[in-house]
Length: 583
Image (spheres, rainbow, N blue to C red):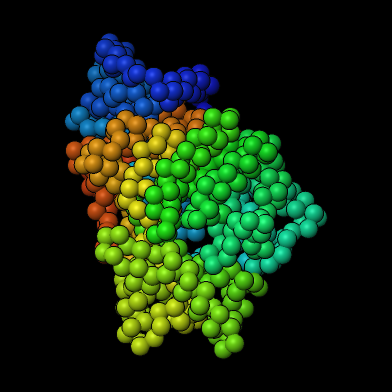
């Protein structure tokens, strides 16, 4: 287990009670009068932050205080004018908050390429939650998806954490076990059938192993583009686990105090059905539920966020512990392979590429891709739709030909149908094409952004400018965009509440009670920012830009960002779930 001072339990109880009060909707009280100076101690603090406006993460109003850090933890909060520090930071009245927690990240392998995780740490993210899709475990020996040139040499979550610790990271990492990864491990790549009872039992055993090694819970990316998710007869894609499968595996995670997280089975026509399914899993498995990147996806579904949020609130009113997170953009990103109908994926990438090249199958594939993309994608800023609302963000070969261009532009330059080009580009680039797609409404996104039960996620990767390509700007700008654009400029939500939903709320959702609040005894994950300057700079045209207005980031009591520059320190650690059992 992570070492903690003896007084941590009392600090955790105090922090938890403060969070409950702050989240209960009561009228905020004025900040308490300044406390008298704390008596000087013999040893200086490792870090002493003076003259800060502390937003403690509970949602309470800011208060002016000094903060002392020692042995990785917050040691004192108050008037520390009689004390000294080995490192002293003059906050000059800027805001000091807990470090931001990214509820949904794809940094699983990128952190092994570059442990600095610059795109995340520079925006104040001190903890990332990974594991959706192809989670890092369980893996068979020799499994290799080749991403970022990383050769996995682990088979379990414990093995991955060991490699992460040996290399070092700027920030902390939590991980789910993916139900999709369990299916791959037990049933093979791209299996198009139901799991047998014996296979479900094997998945449950692997889930228990993952929870004992520190997993946060179970996650599943359920959406299956190009197929029917919620037909009247309840037909679901054979490539996906059933609701009953997910309930069975979630019950194992629940036994270890875990959470069930989900990319909804449908974010479009059957948006509310997807939320109801997630709620049913939570209710029947007895487990908290987190919905990733809540969105009303696709032009025909603009305006559905209000009813969707009402469905979520109704489930909460029935005692189901369900919440969600969101990113502050109207475009999303994923591999181009997601546009390929699910049935074509059976057997893995090599067989899928063979089907894309099969003259007998190409007309069917072209028609299904066209129907899906022309129905769903629409850029409300420009009026572009279909392939013209989809931008290529990365390819391994000849990026100058493709990156930054729409699929429509690429196809027209070749004199081809854009939906046929989807097939050919996938073949040409060996199924390693990344895209950005416009298919959300600003009004819907902002409505979700303002909901008190919604935290924040990047759905992005910890990267660096030398990663190349044109990734989604959320890699670099998610949290500063909320604080700068939506809090300061749009006044869509109060600053203290935005910080609460970046810190104590996600910590509580993930069962992490020793982070997320500025309180003595808790881990010192801290961000110092100027509320009048903080803003994202990353754009779709030029995404590799760090934000402005964040001067210092501290992780586990170590300064990782100082005066806006990375110090080279890598103090991050695995943050293990409640079910962790030390070997």
